[in-house]
Amino acid sequence: MQSYWIDGGTGALQLREVPKPVPAAGEILIRLKAAGLNRGEFILGHGLHKPGGVKPAGFEGSGEVVAVGPGVTEYKIGDAVMGRTTAGFAEFSTLALAETLRKPEALTWEEAAGASLTYWVAYDMVVTEGRIGPGDWVLVSAVSSGVGVASMQIAKALGAKVIGTSGSKTKLERLKSLGLDVGVAVRGPGFLSAVMDATGGAGVRLAINNVGASVFPELVASLAYRGAVGIVGYVDGSFNATIDLNAVHVKRLRVFGVSNKVRPLAERGETVAGFARDVLPLIARGVFKPPIDRVFDFTDLPAARAYMESDAQVGKIVVRMPA
Image: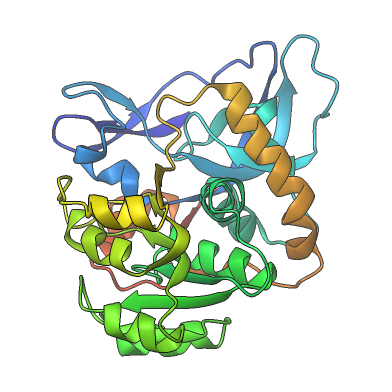
């Protein structure tokens, strides 16, 4: 089968011909229909790839079950599923049962691919760690990113109000049609006064860092009493930031990270189960859907990556597999 691999030292993509994988116990094998791009996979500083190592690329996708591992009874051949892949940019991939969900009929293959890992990360950020509820204010930096849009949609579905930052006024206007309450047209820091104006000086319950160290101090300053900063991305390439310890101390703040790099499968499965319980039914009923910005053909993955790196998208970029 054809499969894209990524070089952990250079980030270069390689299209290879490799054997079709065989599902182990607790796994299924799917013929992929679509796969979503995730910016973190292509930022070498995120540490998702070992320097110098080459590994299959692609973290999330959707497709049809073509084989099941020993003892697997939860799925059968022909089932439509979505989930975390071991090789999403390929014709076939294995999925662990703990990170597999049935595809709602209301979703296209492309939407299902985009509603997998990215939305699980956002759920972990907003619900599990962020503890957001009705009436809370949430600040999302780089809100037009895949995780940014997913976080906004989940927070809004829970009754929260969302402030988003972006360097593009056009993107912010598009996101307002999806529920964004307040858009702040700024790239990087410079949003604090707008946040305080929107919240009546109280600050936000949760600030999501999709950008990196350059905005971290201002995110902390934007927090309300018992607020929290969640860290998920470093598009600015900066990892070291100063922190106002007095603010953390006096306002009883929290700082947490959302990453699956070293997280055990059992814990990842808990997040998937929570998402399936709390959010997937809303998506299935059409309360909201993952906005797909653009779909590329499988052979155009390098172009899809270049488009992602141009920062032109709002929501998910997806590649469609060959028939």
